[in-house]
Image (cartoon, rainbow, N blue to C red):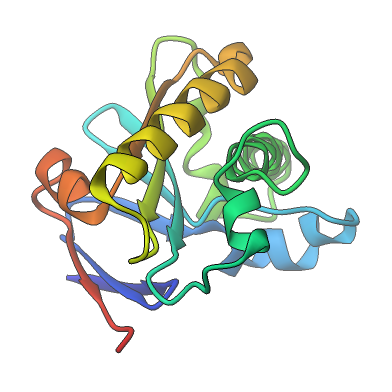
Length: 181
């Protein structure tokens, strides 16, 4: 098993799934980060001709305030959908850059993500704050998904916004445990 921690959550990946934390790679840290305000998605996964770009947002310990509320609304500069779209854009650029240099095998081994016949999925793994009702959480996910699909239409990818339970149903081999108290 490969264990990676992100947003107070432990992810256990089986050995047969190829996964990296993009912002932990040498190429990202030493080259791509030289671009001001560069960002990346949390996990890049290759699994059976599928590529998953996964961004994890855990709001389990979030405060009930205006900043948190703004993250769940679309059409503003603090929106999660805008942040994720920009992270996907930057991550694709990083993969392209690593592929075009011979310096970085860790990222460039994912170069097949750039092929047109590859199944590409962008997943926002969203752990909602405890103060929203289930109905509010569903409405938030739907609004963010519609907005994210618009922003990433150029990528021709499947867009999913899932909580940890839905994610584990989609990828049962990957185990997630929340480490936040």
